[in-house]
Image 1 (cartoon, rainbow, N blue to C red):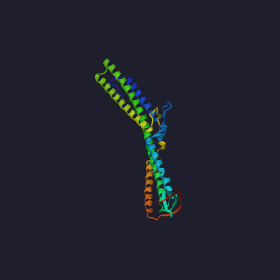
Image 2 (image 1 turned 180 degrees about the horizontal axis):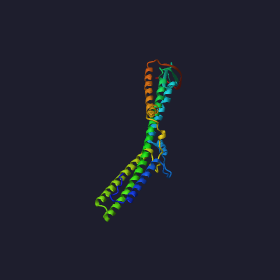
Image 3 (image 1 turned 30 degrees about the vertical axis):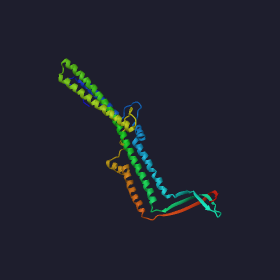
Image 4 (image 1 turned 60 degrees about the horizontal axis):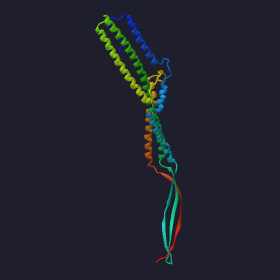
Length: 316
C-alpha cells in the first residue's frame, strides 16, 4: 500500500487529520484479524471445515477407494471356509435293439447326474492367516492415507478461508488509501491554484494516486483469486466470513515435542509402517507355498435315467 505523503508546506492540521484516518483504517483491519469486531451472523471457520470435509471431491473419492480396500478382508477370510461345488449333467441317447423276430425296438434314454463336492483346507502353509493379516494391514494403511488426505484438505480449507479474510482486509485498506490520496490530490490542486505549491507537488500527488489505484486493482484481483480457491476447496462461495480464533493452544510447546508428536502420530509415518508390515507379510505368503497343503474332501452324487419307448417296427 502506498503511504500518503503530504506535500511540503501543508498545514500540520491537515497532516494530523490524514494520519488519524490512516491509523483508524489500520486499527480496524487489525481488529478484523483478531476477531474482536462484533458483526452479523456469518460463516465461521468451523462451518467451512465441516463443509469441506463432507463435500470435497478428492476426499470423497479417497473414501470410496478405502471402502473398496475394506472388502479385501472378507475376501481373505473366505480362505478359512469350505468350498462347495455342485454339478449337474444331463444327456440324451437314442437306443435301437434288434429283436429275435427281426423287429427293431427303439427308445430314447435321458441320463442325468447330480453331485456335490465339499473341500476344506486344513493347512496351506499359513497362507490364509497371512493373507488376512496383509488385508487388515492394507486397510489400516489406507485409513492413515485417507486421514492424511483429510488433513491436506482441511489445511487447504483453512488457507483459503484466511486468504479471503486477508485479501478482503487488504482491499478495504487500499480503498481507504485511495480515498486519502484523492483528498491529498484535491487539496494539492487547490493550493496550486492559490500559488502555495509548485506543479511538481501536484505531479507527485497524481503519481501517488495512480500507484494507489494500481495497488487497489492488484488487491481486488488477489481477492477474486482467493474467493475462487475458496469455492473450489470448500464447495461454496465465501459469504460474510468470521475471523478465526488463535490456534496457539493447539500447537506443540516446542520444536522437539512437535517432532516427537509427528514421528508417532503423523498419518504418513503410520501408513509407511503398515506398508512395511504388508511387505513382510507378503513374503511369508510366498514362503507358505513351499509348505505342503492338506485338504479334506467329501462328495456325493446321484445318477438317474429315464427312457421313452419309440415302439417296434418291422424289417424288410
